[in-house]
Image (cartoon, rainbow, N blue to C red; front, side):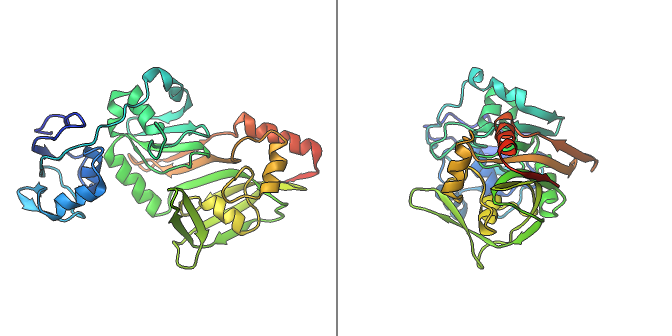
Length: 326
């Protein structure tokens, strides 16, 4: 139960807030709690008020890593919030309801179209989360359990409660969630390949993220398995053990099998060849998701077939080239 009213409107200085932590918020770090509650407030400001002791939990100073407990009373000082940009209109995002493949009281799984970001920001007016919040009042508590690149289509797992999110994050850390993708890559892949190549992320001056294989990067593991090998390309299923930014795309390029339609890490000649066959996007689709349900550990298995715009490209390739199924 929360003693304070909802966060005040953006663009004005907030009054002192006293928030009692409930069971759904329990376990969350105080810095992450403040970042989600104080929309539009820069991270630097959040950490400054923590460092100066202006935020108190049970009348005591705490560190940013402190994890909230049920019943904690959090004092949030007056702070000015930037004006929040308006979200999407309900009528413009009703299509999202048609992408839902699975839903219960804890989870929501959608088949995300390519071209839609999972979150707004960096020049993107809105993403999946903002669209859900425009459709459903209760979606203010929805959080992504994992992410998909904007250019990638397929299965996206969303937690409807924080307790479910914590459970799913534990599942991911323990490598008990199985995520498989389908990708069209350059060249004929004759056998399965395991890629163990650490990845390091860099942010360019433009704000774009570029990832490269680097011994000083984070551990990353991908398994490429050919499903259909043709003369010029291969449809591969990729299982990722880790979930690094752009992992499949960078690993594919690293083993000389760049993805079709990848303008950042791909091969321009191959991309043009596929464009001539009608490919207008990155050929990467999250098609399979298997995980233990956070409620009772029962296994959930979900699949999303390739979108029509990708199967049509495959059909043209099979008409023009000699292909072998595995």
